[in-house]
Each structure stands twice: as structure tokens, then as C-alpha cells.
Amino acid sequence: MGDAVGAIVVLAEDEPDLRAVYAECLRRMGCIVWEAADGSEASELVRAHRPDLLVLDHWMPVLNGLEVLEQLRDAREAIGLKVVMLTHQRDAETRLEGFALGVAAYWTKDLSLSELGDRVRALLEPASA
Image (cartoon, rainbow, N blue to C red; front, side, top):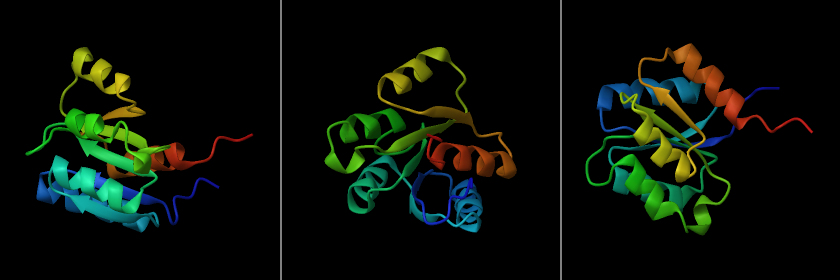
């Protein structure tokens, strides 16, 4: 178990190098990855592809991560969507705001790729009955 094969992930990160590295890591795990360079693209991709997981950078152009979540709050396409915020921010206020909008987890951008893989697997694993 613990396999992310076939999971659809929308990855929103405005830093191209970082986005490429994360996307490659997720694809190696067997995920189908749609990449967004800003918040508005992320929102559109979620609506178009109904992903299992949205990995969302906090600070992005057009819409920031929290604004994306506000946009998706009432979207049918986002029902059951798991959201992870990627951030350099460690402040509690930002996190509380995110959790209030349904964020499943906050990960800081200093996490290693193997850690990223483990955490994504853990999130996508169906809860054992």
C-alpha cells in the first residue's frame, strides 16, 4: 500500500525551478501532475481536473494560496480535495487562516524530496477502516 499511483495532483508554485523539482518527484511516484504558476491557474486546473491533492504555494502572483482556497470553497470540483500549503512562512496566524479554509497540512519548503514523497503518500492513502 502507500502508493500514489494514478493520483491527480495540482501543483501550484510560482518558482519554476522548485515547481519542476516537485513535479518530477510526484511524477516518479506515479502521480498525474498539473502545474500552475499562479493562483488563478491553480484554481482553473482544480476545476478542470478535479484532483485528489492540491499542493499550494502560499505566496503567488494573481491570487495567493488563501485566495485560491476562498475561490474554491464552494466549488463542486473541490469537494473532497486535500490541500497542502507550501510556505516559507512559519507564523501561526497564516496557518490558522489556512486551517480555517480546510488546509490539511502546512509544509515548509525546506523539506527534502523523500520527505515530500512520504507525506504525499500518507495523505493520499485511504484511511484504513
